[in-house]
Structures are given as structure tokens and as C-alpha cells.
Image 1 (cartoon, rainbow, N blue to C red):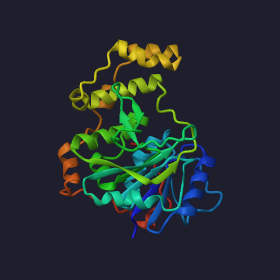
Image 2: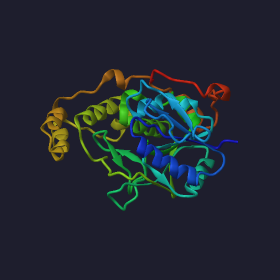
Image 3: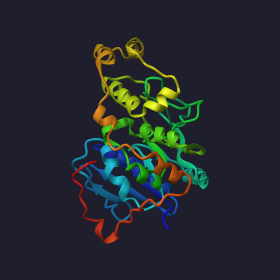
Image 4: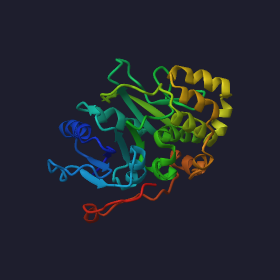
Length: 299
């Protein structure tokens, strides 16, 4: 019986993907499947298709777009996301999976380590501007997509990952969990090394627009915390970027209203999942159809 589906979305870096696959195949316990949605770049040179399910999604241009399609194709009740390049240790699943024994726990974050800091990051929080920020000494809203555990039933109630929010799709899910009264737990005995520097603090024009969109999408949550980022606040926040383009964007960029209102979930449905009252349809793909499936459109 499958307990965990491990999903590694890979856009174009076969070397980093293979380093993660090696780590998983050396350390994974029974009851797991490994699923690799990729944008057509990986041709399985080592013939691992018997141990890893490869899903070709050539239209996808980002990890979020890959996840927006592939999440519904997994078979286990717990979905574990890993970024290409991430490595794990033996037993890393145990503490994370045990946290889901509490029915209100919708997501779990492992202890995540970046290559440029010895300090563990415990998922994500939203700063006052709506930007993704590392949860270190505070409770996380949700895990980061590079190392995350979710209930499948939560993703089903949300309709999966909102690709229009790009890299902020994970924080979007964390905010919906918080608004519906669910919990995100920290698995302190589960370690994931991302083997790359942390860039959560970096401000870019794209991130400014996404943050403003996220604030529009979750107006009540941000309003309840009294957070307000005016033009001067945004200008101050962008000064450290060292980019004139980013500073101008902080003053002039506006939220994407279409993305902010795209596929808004029903909070009552989310609360039903949290309270164990959900009747969410559980996708159960037929094994004999998986080998040749190619998905050409990302949600």
C-alpha cells in the first residue's frame, strides 16, 4: 500500500534531477512512489522507468506549471514535493508522515537547509508586503514547494497549485490552510538539504507583482493583521535589491486581478477536509494507462 508519493518537478536540469533520484533510491522506504513530471528534457538514460514514474509535460515552463498538472496523478494520501538537487537522509519520511496523525494537519514542513547557511528553515511565512519569507523562529504558514508534505485531500479541495501565482503558489496554499483553520506542522527530525543558496529575501519586479497579487487574493487575512504596504514602504523594501528596475516596479507595479481571482477555493470545502467531513473524489489512475501518457497543457 502506498503511503507517500514523492514528486520532483524538473524543467531542464537533468544533473540536479539525477542527484535527487540517487538520494531517494538509496534512502526511500517501502510504501513510496517516485513521480517525475518534466518538460520533455529527460529521456531516462539509465532506464529507471521501472522505479520512477516519468510524466512528460512539454508545455510546462516552470516547476509550478508541472505541479499544477502532476499533483492529481499521484496515488498516495500524502504528497511530498522535492526540488531537483535536493538530497535526503535515511528515515527522513518517518517524522513527517507521523505528523499527519492529527487530522487538522494539512501540511508538514521538514527542516530545510540551504547551502549558504547552517540554520534550518521551517517553511514559509508572508511578510507585511506579501513576499515569501523564511520561517525560522516563527510558526510557518506552510512548507516551501522545494521541500513540502501535503495531504492529497487538501490539494484536491484547492484544485491543486495555482500556476498563475508561479513561485508564490506554495505560500498561497499556506494562506488557505491558515484561513480555513488548518495546521502546518514542523517535522524536526526530517531533514532535506536543497544544496543551493537561499534567495527568499531577494526582491525582483516579478516578485513585487506576485506579492501584490497575493495580497489581493487574501485581502481578509492581510487586513486582519493590519499589514499595509504603501508606495514608500515598497520603495524602502526594494532598496536592497540594487536594481533600479525593481525599485521602479515597487512603485508602479499593480496586482494581477485575474490571477488574484483565479479558481478561488470554497473555504467550507477546506474546512470539511480539516474536520474530516470531506467527500473529496480521490484520483486513482489506472496503471495500464500511465506509461505513454503525455500532457501538453499546464493548468
